[in-house]
Amino acid sequence: MTAEQCLEGTGLELQQLLNPSAEVTARHDLVVTRNLIELLGSRAGQLGLEVGLRYHLTAYGIWGFALISSPTLRAAIDVGVRFFDLTFSLGQLHAREDFDGELHLVLDAPDVPPGLRRYFVERDAAAIMTIYRELLNDPLSHGRIQFAFPPPTQGSDRYLEIFGVIPTFDAAETVIAIDADLTTIQLPQANPHTTAIAVEQCRELLARRRARTGIAGHVRDQLVTHLADPPDADSVAAILHMSGRTLRKRLAAEGTSFRTLLDEVREHLAEELLITAGLPVEQIAHRLGYVEVSSFSQAFRRWKGVGPRAFRTNQTAPVLRAPAPELPSHPPSGRI
Image (cartoon, rainbow, N blue to C red; front, side):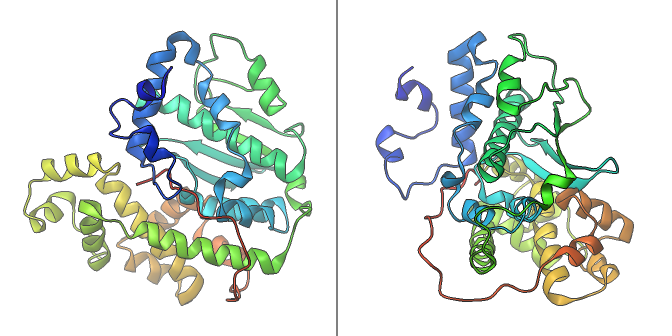
């Protein structure tokens, strides 16, 4: 396949991709993936796995640096999930504790078209496995993995080679389960001071990327202003002098949706209020427009894998502001 075939319909040219300051959007990623799958035909079955193996820690810039310098695997997972939007993923990831002595990493890609969803989820799973090996130098020998997809038509040998275990298919959700005892092992390049600096840079970078432009930026501004009593999509559309249908189409063209933006604003502000403001969870829930605290707690658990009180308890002391060392450059974001 030629580069031109892969880039067809993206509006990109190969020369643009050679520019280190270029940014590839979610729409570009979706179009290229669709082209690849169509061009490969029956050979595209496990393409997501093969691509995910190429996402090494060094490819993620400051996000990867924060993981490498974390004290333990659990700390690295907490940082990774918290700043997951800085990765190349188009999906979602959250961690949760299991009563059977496992830590679950739950993967999904609800905003990706169904025909491409398996590719992106499997790409993320293989990328996570690559990171796991590079952090611990160990296969998933004491864990398990399950996929919310049918078994592959080409056999599961490649899955065994990548994950170190035979996956379960047709599960209710896609989960990488890690032995909880492994999450307490100290990582070889742990450095608390470096972690503090890297996490602070991740926070600043994520804040800048969430300051969206275009129609999504205007919608986000309206949601932040009226978050205690959030307007619906049609009300925001009227403020922006367009129909609800037009607003949804324009948001889709920018790779997002009204619901995604509302969740994004609530998640970001909830995190900030829990860490810095010290407000009771009940007050934070009401400030974010939730009538019931239980609804806020449920949403927060979906975002972070733990409830708001547990999240606040698990946070480390505020990071130190200090001159940053020479760190890897920020990677282009996979998201808009």
